[in-house]
Length: 322
Image 1 (cartoon, rainbow, N blue to C red):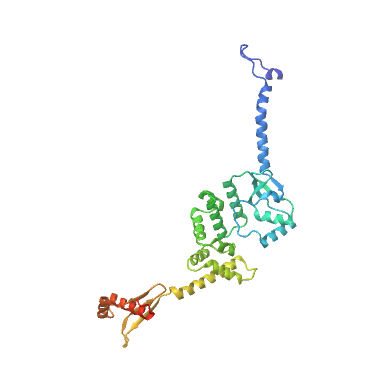
Image 2 (image 1 turned 180 degrees about the vertical axis):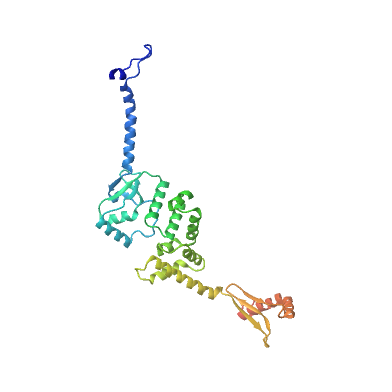
């Protein structure tokens, strides 16, 4: 019965017999094996591997201002004690048996200090996907400071990444990206790297410092200020010290050259004659007609000639002769 079911003769004797199973199997096998091989490669590509740290290149855009600092030593000590709890992510390099870091730069730096292999997820990603993975993972694990995000945005834009990719990488809206970019474009990059990440210092404070940068040499002031601080001063405290020094310098400069001083000029009897206003850019004589209308009319007729006479008198007193 079973044989009759599986070995039915052709219904039409003139019709050629159906192909035997063997050729069908032989034609489909390579494709099936190839698909299985691809699946295994994908599983392997997404698995966690132990990789020698010197086979991983620290390329790509940096999203941290400080990498080699005491926090790396603390992380290395924790890994020695508890092991590496969270894998990093890498992607294959163009060079054989080498990888490029996607995220986990601090963990990789710590393991390079402790020795041994690093646990890594290997993913085949293009540049856009790699950047998005880097930004999102860092936002989840240790939120970058405002100024670190600003520098990261600047580097992404200079590298030619599209606005949508930048927004996805940091989880920001278009306006949020713009807010960061406006600040970083006004500040010298050397100043930012001198201060550091300044966690806890937000957009408003950095914006205020950016405004001061158009009035005083903020980098020179920062360098002088930070040279006088203890070595262990935190980055946030460095920012506050620099901001205070720049604000003070701006006020002094304003008082010396930009502050307007107005003096009321009166005659011997105390009646108002006019007002003299002086600042760093101009000297102005103001006559209020309602206080002394006749004098105002008289001065209006003679203002140009009087000003020329005063100028000639000044030249004579300087001894210029012309």
